[in-house]
Length: 206
Image (cartoon, rainbow, N blue to C red; front, top):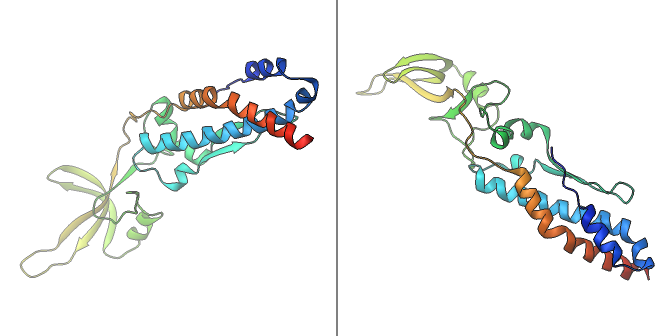
C-alpha cells in the first residue's frame, strides 16, 4: 500500500479563498478526493486491460474504493483480497501461482471468452467415467493433467487425449505499476476536482 498526499494543493487553494468559501473547503475536499479516487480506479482498470492478457470482469471489478468523508478526508483505492492474491506478482514480481496450486493450461477443454477454464471444470471432467487425473509418459515427456480416454474408431485405435495440463508456475514479467498510475492521475486530476467541488459547494450553499 502507498499514500499520496494532496495537503499542499488544499493549503494553496485555502489561501486564495475568502471566509465563506473556506468554510466549504472540508466538504469540497472530500468530494474532490472521491472524484479523484474514482478516476484512479478507472485508470487502474484501463491499465489492467493493457498489461494483462484479457482480464476477466472479476479481475477488473476487483478495483474498489473506500470513500472519504468530511471528517476523514482520506480515500482508499484498493484491490479486493482474492484478486490481490493473484495480481501481486504482476506488481512486485514472483511466480504467477495462486495458493500454491499448479497452473491449469487448457489443451482440449473448452474455455470461456477470456481464454480461461470455466469454474470447477477440472472437477467436472474428473468425475466422468472416461477421464482421469494423473501423469502420463508421452513423447514430449511426463505430463500431468486431466486425460480423456478416446474410443476406438474405424481405422483408428483408442488412446488418451490431454484435456487440461497442470503446469508449473513461471515468473510474472508484466508490471501493473499501481503506484505510478495513481500518482499520474492524482497529479493531473485533484486540483481541478477541488476547484470544481469548491465552486459547486458555494453555489449550493447560497
